[in-house]
Length: 243
Image (cartoon, rainbow, N blue to C red; front, side, top):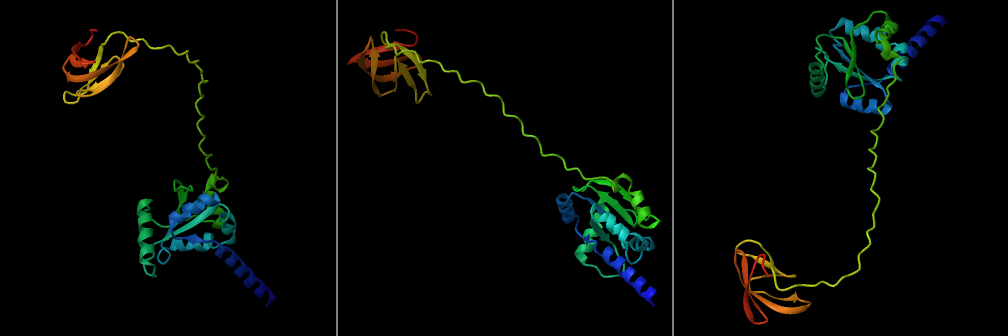
């Protein structure tokens, strides 16, 4: 009787430990958790109520404490069940079928191992031999550690050229020669002329430096290459390039 009780307690203890594994139904949520916890993703496609091999994989491997001890620190588990008879939420079933199509699953059980960002690195099916046989088929993944890529290095700032200070030359008084039309700019309707140091449009008046003194000039008409002005009341025409 005592032996029977111990056997029952041992079986219940193993079952409880295996039940401690959490199987998610959302791959995107699994990716986020895998990135946070630095783990791989183990995605299992199963037909829980019609596929004998799926049922054996669950009872012989996934429900065993040895598998739980192995998987808990290394994997985020995701189940994509495709039952034929037992009820399952419509949205969950549609999501599982979408995953089945996305991963090109041709038969169940299919177990796909993914990186935290969802890249497939291994797949297998039912493996005899219990947890040890299944773990052995995972090969190097069973011992691998996720290595997160380092953050991108910041580009070094370009070396700044040394600031060169150019001394300001001492001020020299400007000397203006006779009146000269230096440029004509703008459109035909809004022309502007530069006479010595002053810019003006038709109808405007300005003081202009001539031989170190000011004269008052009024702009009367701006032509293609000349301008008609009055200088201190005297009418004259200035031509581009001529004084």
